[in-house]
Image (cartoon, rainbow, N blue to C red; front, side, top):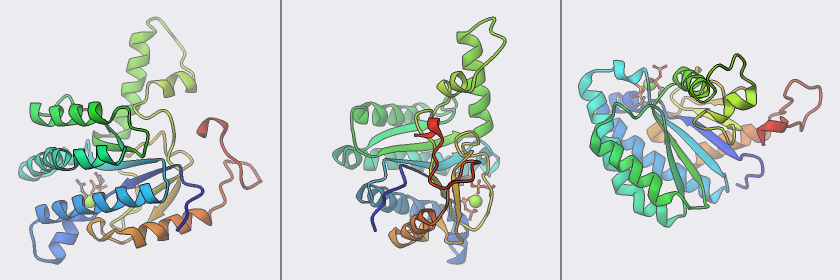
Length: 239
Ligand code: IPE
Ligand code: IPE
Ligand code: MG
């Protein structure tokens, strides 16, 4: 399927635990299967000429899960970055991680830094992973960054504010949430202001190219009005 419209796609990859439960397997089995879906969808985005893909992998609220699951997930991220980084680099993909990484262990921070450094100059798909990310955290963080670089300032503009966000160069055109829930779960609250929303019951480990194409088709039939009465409008700063 061709893609003319989606520049930036974001995904809340939900449903790993239920997918595993349905097979009477431990939740960790679902998280491992979820990594395979990431691999499939990254490649699919490249062939569909999507410029940017932002994946929600671990929320600031996911720390409230049992300690063994949190530990498992963080180790899985580190392992997976190390496993796939050469292939991603070879495919000209530029990787970024957003979120609060100050609490991660040395090994995970090291893998994150290496991946970002290695792929820094790549000009292909921009691939962003939100790990220990929360939209409210990002907004407060941006505000605090502004205050510390503009001491004494009593006003902030939208433009100044956006400069301090982790992702400030583009906003998602389409958000996909798998797993059947219809909520943002604190994912990019600012950047999703005018994003089209697509919810599917498909669990993340089952999400594949066919499912992605259904979402793209849905998006292509949307009429993006941005508050106007005409279609085909685009927010000036949303390009
Ligand atoms: C998404 O799957 C992965 C993470 C949040 C890390 P879940 O683990 O939330 O799976 P469900 O929603 O319990 O099925
Ligand atoms: C959202 O999924 C976070 C990620 C996919 C990383 P959750 O499973 O944590 O969201 P809730 O708890 O159902 O809102
Ligand atoms: Mg979930």
